[in-house]
Amino acid sequence: HGDIAVSSKGEVYVSIMDPKAGVQVFGADGQWLRNVPNAPSDFHGFVIHKDADGQEYLYGPRLGGGNILKLTLEGKEVLNIPASAIPDDFKAKTKEGASRVAMTGMDVAPNGDLYVTDGYASSYVHRFDKTGKYLKSFGGKKAPYNFTTLHKIAVDTRFTPIRIIACDREAMRVVHLSSDGEFLGVVAKDLLNPAAITVQGDYALVGEIRGEVSVLDKEGKLVAKLGLNTEKGEVGTNKTEPAKWRLGIVTAPHGVAFNAHGDIFVSEYSTFGRVHRFNKL
Image (cartoon, rainbow, N blue to C red; front, side):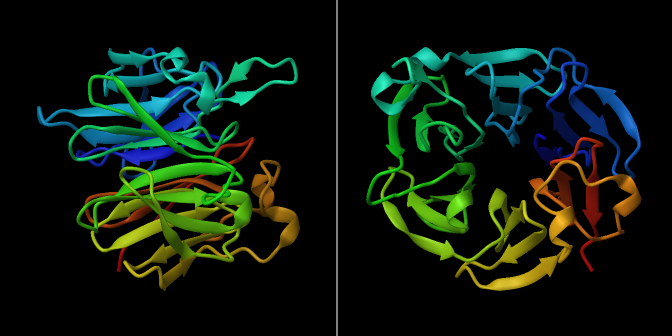
């Protein structure tokens, strides 16, 4: 119940919402290699980003812990942004009136700015600079955004200036925002609860938790549909048993990634743990 990313070496990193697992690393062939030391067990969403220093880092918000982390691929903490850095005006409230966050995904812009979505609380996007300094928040559940669950986001480098592309899960749509937070429009709609998104080259890859993965072009048109599952009892749940799994058919995509070649990796919301690989033809 986490996310997936691929390093420049082709190693596949999978975050697991389990105190004994944290972030696992697999070879391109699916063989377990190691766990990342000190990685948290609540990286609901994370990315691997190569910084200006040429090194790759793990960036992710902790769903339960509420802080935002930057780690080396070996697990060394480089940056830790506490939830208190976000103004209370942009947080959801508990029944008792306390402020809370439940951040679900993030990405890193080419200039190092961090964009983090509070998908399970306020549906705001919080922006920080590369040092962790808070800059601003935008989005939320009111007009003009009207977000439901802004689950995961990606920096969309296909445009100049860059944009933010985001999964508004319960509204079944993918949307574009400017890097400063202006609502630019709907990219695609009537999806099967889009939960995860990433961009590489000309394409955006969308994992839909109710049973499919879509590849969209720059205009938002469907280029390919992968793994479509039409068995309603098997999708959108973490309880579909391995005995019901079918090769190339997804159940609950929750994380998506490309490798350098353009092959596609999908991690699922699953009690049993499942990762797909679709090879680019």
